[in-house]
Length: 385
Image (tube, rainbow, N blue to C red; front, side, top):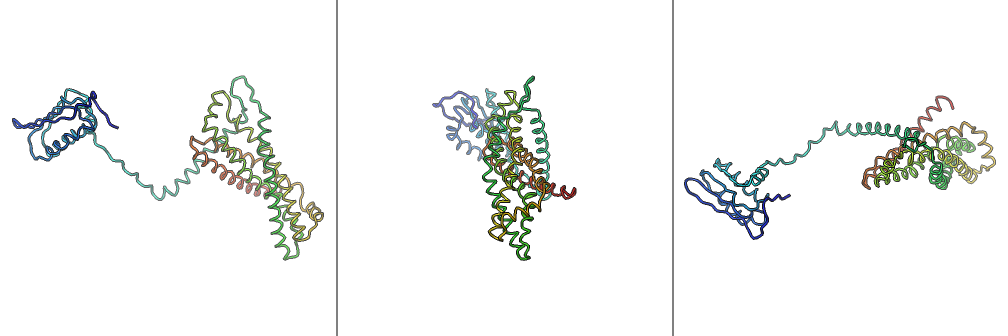
């Protein structure tokens, strides 16, 4: 930044007059002391600064028409040189603004110091502290979202917080119906893999028929709902975060608030409700196609006829086997919706932030889903379900 004081006149240049008489050095400055012109007098000032002496110096700025920071710095350099060799110097000017600029230039500059590196203890445990603090913030946001969803879609006095079935049905179509092909294909392949690997090991003992029990119990109780939830977290969770993040970046969420609408009730509630409805349905699809894959590979690989497979499956499982997996689905759906919504509402105004929070939403949702599945497994074991 270059500060200049005075009127502009390109025809006037910097002028310098030096006289020595009566035991003093008188320096008269005149003209335009700005960046383009001070080089004309810079050499003379340097020669004066290099001359040894103790005579007092008097500097008159009264003839300066225009002064900027470049000219002020050159004058300050002369003052600093005189003070360094204990040579008296006095400055006079009829313009107080010139003196103010000289005083501003004379303020010592403190170079920025590099921050001290954190200790090893802080580097190791600061990340843990930030993570724990982040979990607390996420928990508070999750409670807010749940409460605002229950409150409804309207914030205006006298308005009912009505639920919009059209929005929920639309989200069910996007999250559920359109996800059926990928869920079915994934479950079919997983059923094939579990049955093939199980039959390979049981065939050694001549007990390949028990592959029916293995696939039925494992897929219906654990694998079907867990892999479906993971697939939904990656497919739908990332979409929710990206949609809400884009709305946040374009200030559409702020616009809803200005209109008197509850953004949570309008945007988040239909998505969470749709997830809670469709994830159990997708789990049923996963179970059916997983069993179909196991039937096909068992017939081809160990000659277990489909009728025999289905007959043994009916004796190997019961309703508790099926419902133990379906009971988990709504809880996992709620977790996926909350995590995705929280990360979407955290997005700031940059594309980098959108990508970072979308990735974080998928990772957190999958992690929490696996933790919840483990807690359900422990709970089922305790109550012998």
